[in-house]
Amino acid sequence: MDNTAATQRPEAGDHASPASGPWPITLDDVTVRYPNGVVAMKNVSLEIGAGEMVAVVGLSGSGKSTMIRTINGLVTPTAGTVTVGPHRISRLKGAALRRARGDIGMIFQSFNLADRTSVYRNAMVGRFSHTPTWRTLLGLTTAEDRDIVMRALDSVGMLEKVWHRAGALSGGQKQRVAIARALAQQPAVMLADEPVASLDPPTAHSVMADLADINADRGLTVLVNLHLMDLARQYTTRMIGLRAGEVVYDGPAASATDADFEQIYGRPVQQRDRLGQQ
Amino acid sequence: MTAADAVAGERSQLTIPPRPRTWPRAAAIVAALAAFTILTTIPAIGGVELDFASIARNWTNGADRIVQMLTPDWSILPRTWQPLLETLEMALVDAAISAVLAVPLSLWAARPTNPNGVARRAVRFVLNVVRAVPDLVYATVLVAMVGVGTLPGIITLVLFDIGIVVKLVSEAIDSADAHYMEAGRAAGGTQTQINRVTALPQSWPAIASQVLYSLELNVRISAILGLVGAGGIGRLIDEMRGFYRYDALGTIVLEILVVVIAIEVASNLLRKRLR
Ligand SMILES: Nc1ncnc2c1ncn2[C@@H]1O[C@H](COP(=O)(O)OP(=O)(O)OP(=O)(O)O)[C@@H](O)[C@H]1O
Ligand SMILES: [Mg+2]
Image (tube, rainbow over all chains, first blue to last red):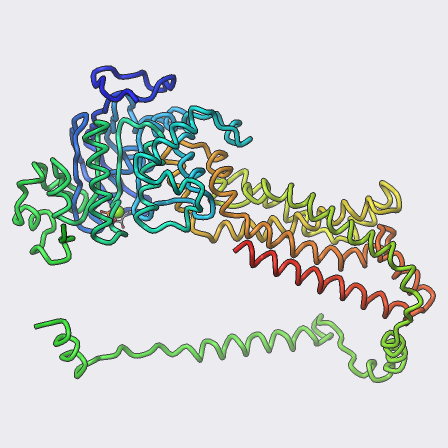
């Protein structure tokens, strides 16, 4: 896989080759107001450089999920623009938006696997944007797609489970399959929405380590929502603090002090803000 | 203060919120339903006429027939094999055809698998119409169109099955958690791709379960469809009824019972394996 040429950026929609090199993410004055009137993001402007590993921290309801969803267009901003590499996400629709999403991997707190089908088919979901609908409908896969999927599963140590039912896996294994699904997209950017919140501490650490590897080895831009301060400090380099839909902190993660967290949380740091162990 | 202390401290001064009184509401609902039921049986205000006295007057007429049915005439058995087999074949063919047709229709009729409200409502509306027409009406019209035989029966049952299977399966899809769809969407998939690779395998148990149920219904309904010449065991039932051969009818009813129970046992086994 060619992920080294950071300067060479393909045209949006060029799928002859996988997205090469990481992409920057830019939010410009983004506001999200949900139909029920809740303003989940207020005039947020951010620059995330290509290849950065960024944590987004904040209390429940602070707008972390909303922010990460604006980046792949699962949520459309009411105002402002979102740009990922060559894609002006907030302006895209239909096929163009699907193509852009294909270049942006995403993993979720609840894994979002189809439990009744195989690990293989779940990982094949990552090839959707590179496959014509009629081929998917007929169940046709190319040798190249199979190879990409198998390699992605292998890279997270899940190749031996490839023919198992996704529902029969443990939480940590499910999240690894979900990471493989995202990697099968050969994305330039990886988004993770509370990827370890449903996992026990040792598994949480190993999944965070997988994400850090993806950032270091493949050079992907990684944006990960976390609500535990020690995970943010240990695995990411930059931390963005959200409170009530506004950026209240933006700085290095490793040196963020408890006082910084108290400012983000708007309350004293508590035991449950840390995962502990390792 | 440890957590245990906190619990002990709270135990002495628990203030339990007052439990909401729900029984007056329940009683009112029951009373309203009872009043409505009674009102519907008063002919003076347009209710149905329930003449219980006529049951007593005509009791013996019906009783004779029931007694005859309870003494089945087994000599009819050899004549039943062929139509019974025909009924079973119809039931199976119908279940198979309707399963194939119901899969895409169910996905179109459910919200998670078809976010397009217009298309979804159109499919649901057509299916409501299909369900609203009684099966005997389909059979009568189709017999007139394509002639007496199994074909009108098969088409009738397919329409009937699709109506039921699509409704029940699409409701099952509507009420199931569909987090996996979000992953497909985030990966840039089209709704069709997401449905094919993830929603379809997730919905198999619901589809299989309802198709098996329709198989059982098919056997029972085809007993009625024979009355209008749409093939199967119903033809024989109609003939025996015409000759007042209630003892022979008893045999046929028993046979249908055995078949329905056999199908139920088989489908329960299958359902368990699917889970
Ligand atoms: N689809 C929606 N419709 C309406 N309001 C929503 C929707 N999604 C989120 N919200 C509201 O927007 C605000 C931000 O929610 P969001 O899910 O982004 O927070 P979060 O930081 O991810 O929280 P958590 O840690 O609990 O996941 C909350 O007040 C929430 O109730
Ligand atoms: Mg969230």
